[in-house]
Length: 83
Image (tube, rainbow, N blue to C red; front, side, top):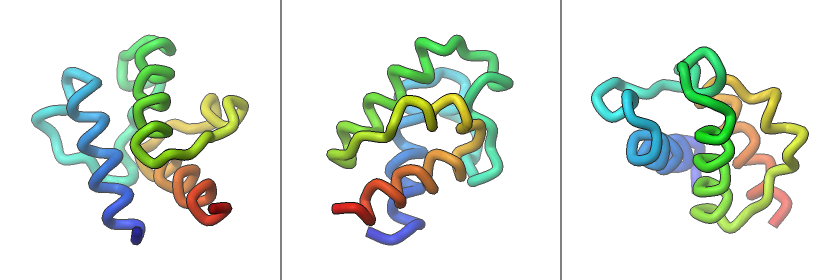
């Protein structure tokens, strides 16, 4: 799976699970944590969905450092490379 495919899959999960992102273009610089106005539980829920979709586990300590879609893509790529 290449970076573009990973980005598209994550963007789809974000759009489905985070109201407000369904009608905007999601690019790697799009902020999806904290400043987006969602509480931390929403972000945790979305991260769990992403982990399940890719059959990976991203260390929780990395989650709080993620702010943009690109940060999440980087983390997914890193975990997929370990497989």
